[in-house]
Length: 88
Figure (cartoon, rainbow, N blue to C red):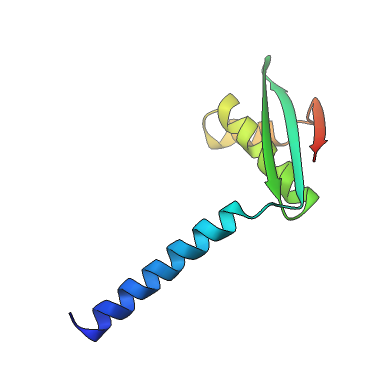
């Protein structure tokens, strides 16, 4: 094989290894957010390096199950959550 092919393969392997390793590292903050939107409730758990990112990700995940479309998703994400539970 050509040298450039080996470099490309090594680069792809490095990226995949980084993604696998970083996904298994525990995050500092983990929370469960419950949201009711248009009469339906959903709860989702997320973890991240900051409190704000963990809460935002859990909210986004819950709203993804409750809505479809950009407008409804935006409205849902701006709805105050019913509860936010910080997990260990």
